[in-house]
Length: 157
Image (cartoon, rainbow, N blue to C red):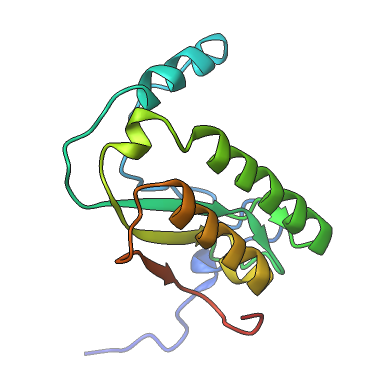
Protein backbone atom coordinates (compact mmCIF):
# COMPACT_ATOMS: atom_id res chain seq x y z
CA UNK A 1 0.00 0.00 0.00
CA UNK A 2 1.40 3.38 -1.03
CA UNK A 3 1.06 6.28 1.45
CA UNK A 4 0.79 9.84 0.23
CA UNK A 5 3.10 11.93 2.40
CA UNK A 6 2.18 15.12 0.52
CA UNK A 7 -1.40 15.44 1.77
CA UNK A 8 -2.86 18.93 1.21
CA UNK A 9 -4.68 20.00 4.39
CA UNK A 10 -5.22 23.64 3.40
CA UNK A 11 -8.91 23.11 2.47
CA UNK A 12 -9.50 22.39 6.17
CA UNK A 13 -7.84 25.57 7.48
CA UNK A 14 -9.89 28.52 8.73
CA UNK A 15 -10.07 31.49 6.39
CA UNK A 16 -8.93 34.97 7.40
CA UNK A 17 -11.66 37.54 8.02
CA UNK A 18 -15.13 37.47 9.55
CA UNK A 19 -16.20 34.13 8.03
CA UNK A 20 -13.51 31.58 8.96
CA UNK A 21 -15.48 28.65 7.53
CA UNK A 22 -17.15 29.14 4.15
CA UNK A 23 -19.79 26.43 4.51
CA UNK A 24 -20.32 26.34 8.28
CA UNK A 25 -23.91 25.93 9.40
CA UNK A 26 -24.88 26.25 13.05
CA UNK A 27 -26.83 23.28 14.38
CA UNK A 28 -29.06 24.93 16.94
CA UNK A 29 -32.13 23.51 18.68
CA UNK A 30 -34.42 25.94 16.89
CA UNK A 31 -32.91 25.31 13.47
CA UNK A 32 -35.60 25.74 10.86
CA UNK A 33 -37.75 27.94 13.11
CA UNK A 34 -39.53 30.82 11.44
CA UNK A 35 -38.37 34.23 12.70
CA UNK A 36 -40.97 36.55 14.20
CA UNK A 37 -41.51 39.65 12.07
CA UNK A 38 -40.16 42.81 13.68
CA UNK A 39 -43.56 44.56 14.11
CA UNK A 40 -44.85 41.47 15.99
CA UNK A 41 -41.89 40.98 18.36
CA UNK A 42 -43.26 42.90 21.36
CA UNK A 43 -46.75 41.38 21.25
CA UNK A 44 -45.39 37.88 20.66
CA UNK A 45 -43.01 38.20 23.60
CA UNK A 46 -45.78 39.52 25.87
CA UNK A 47 -47.88 36.50 24.87
CA UNK A 48 -45.02 34.11 25.73
CA UNK A 49 -44.24 35.59 29.16
CA UNK A 50 -47.95 35.83 29.97
CA UNK A 51 -48.28 32.05 29.95
CA UNK A 52 -47.50 29.65 32.76
CA UNK A 53 -45.55 26.42 32.42
CA UNK A 54 -45.81 23.11 34.25
CA UNK A 55 -43.84 23.01 37.48
CA UNK A 56 -40.73 21.15 36.38
CA UNK A 57 -37.03 21.84 36.45
CA UNK A 58 -36.05 24.74 34.22
CA UNK A 59 -32.87 26.53 33.32
CA UNK A 60 -32.02 30.04 32.22
CA UNK A 61 -29.44 30.63 29.49
CA UNK A 62 -27.80 34.05 29.50
CA UNK A 63 -25.76 34.96 26.44
CA UNK A 64 -22.72 37.12 27.10
CA UNK A 65 -21.82 38.44 23.62
CA UNK A 66 -18.23 39.55 24.24
CA UNK A 67 -14.87 37.98 23.41
CA UNK A 68 -11.33 39.19 23.99
CA UNK A 69 -10.31 37.57 20.69
CA UNK A 70 -12.05 36.12 17.65
CA UNK A 71 -11.15 32.42 17.65
CA UNK A 72 -10.91 31.11 14.10
CA UNK A 73 -13.03 28.04 14.89
CA UNK A 74 -15.94 30.00 16.34
CA UNK A 75 -18.95 31.18 14.40
CA UNK A 76 -20.54 32.92 17.38
CA UNK A 77 -18.22 35.94 17.71
CA UNK A 78 -20.26 39.15 17.99
CA UNK A 79 -18.53 41.89 19.94
CA UNK A 80 -14.99 42.66 20.97
CA UNK A 81 -14.52 42.78 24.74
CA UNK A 82 -14.49 46.28 26.18
CA UNK A 83 -14.94 46.79 29.90
CA UNK A 84 -17.45 49.65 29.62
CA UNK A 85 -19.56 47.68 27.10
CA UNK A 86 -19.70 44.71 29.48
CA UNK A 87 -20.80 46.97 32.34
CA UNK A 88 -23.53 48.58 30.19
CA UNK A 89 -24.67 45.12 29.04
CA UNK A 90 -24.89 43.92 32.65
CA UNK A 91 -26.92 47.00 33.64
CA UNK A 92 -29.33 46.42 30.72
CA UNK A 93 -29.64 42.73 31.57
CA UNK A 94 -30.45 43.57 35.21
CA UNK A 95 -33.15 46.04 34.09
CA UNK A 96 -34.67 43.32 31.89
CA UNK A 97 -34.63 40.78 34.73
CA UNK A 98 -36.36 43.27 37.05
CA UNK A 99 -38.88 44.31 34.39
CA UNK A 100 -40.07 40.76 33.67
CA UNK A 101 -39.59 39.08 37.03
CA UNK A 102 -43.28 39.15 37.97
CA UNK A 103 -44.50 37.63 34.71
CA UNK A 104 -46.53 34.41 34.92
CA UNK A 105 -43.89 32.56 32.89
CA UNK A 106 -41.06 33.38 35.28
CA UNK A 107 -43.08 32.83 38.46
CA UNK A 108 -44.84 29.59 37.44
CA UNK A 109 -41.96 27.16 37.93
CA UNK A 110 -38.63 27.18 39.76
CA UNK A 111 -35.35 27.87 38.04
CA UNK A 112 -32.77 25.23 38.92
CA UNK A 113 -29.75 26.28 36.87
CA UNK A 114 -28.30 29.31 35.14
CA UNK A 115 -26.04 28.74 32.14
CA UNK A 116 -23.80 31.55 30.97
CA UNK A 117 -22.72 31.19 27.35
CA UNK A 118 -21.37 33.34 24.63
CA UNK A 119 -19.07 34.74 23.64
CA UNK A 120 -16.89 34.51 26.68
CA UNK A 121 -18.92 34.68 29.91
CA UNK A 122 -15.77 35.17 31.96
CA UNK A 123 -15.28 38.45 30.08
CA UNK A 124 -17.71 39.91 32.61
CA UNK A 125 -16.19 41.08 35.86
CA UNK A 126 -16.84 38.75 38.81
CA UNK A 127 -18.89 41.51 40.47
CA UNK A 128 -21.18 41.68 37.40
CA UNK A 129 -21.68 37.89 37.37
CA UNK A 130 -22.53 38.09 41.08
CA UNK A 131 -25.02 40.93 40.45
CA UNK A 132 -26.77 38.87 37.77
CA UNK A 133 -27.01 35.74 39.94
CA UNK A 134 -28.23 37.79 42.91
CA UNK A 135 -30.91 39.45 40.77
CA UNK A 136 -32.13 36.10 39.41
CA UNK A 137 -32.24 34.59 42.89
CA UNK A 138 -34.09 37.60 44.32
CA UNK A 139 -36.61 38.19 41.53
CA UNK A 140 -37.51 34.73 40.23
CA UNK A 141 -38.63 31.43 41.61
CA UNK A 142 -34.99 30.36 41.66
CA UNK A 143 -34.86 29.09 45.21
CA UNK A 144 -31.90 27.87 47.24
CA UNK A 145 -31.01 25.02 44.87
CA UNK A 146 -30.02 27.36 42.03
CA UNK A 147 -26.83 26.21 40.34
CA UNK A 148 -24.57 28.37 38.19
CA UNK A 149 -22.89 26.61 35.26
CA UNK A 150 -20.02 28.53 33.77
CA UNK A 151 -17.59 27.25 31.18
CA UNK A 152 -14.58 29.04 29.88
CA UNK A 153 -11.34 30.54 31.05
CA UNK A 154 -11.47 31.59 34.67
CA UNK A 155 -8.73 34.17 34.51
CA UNK A 156 -11.10 37.02 35.39
CA UNK A 157 -13.03 35.15 38.09
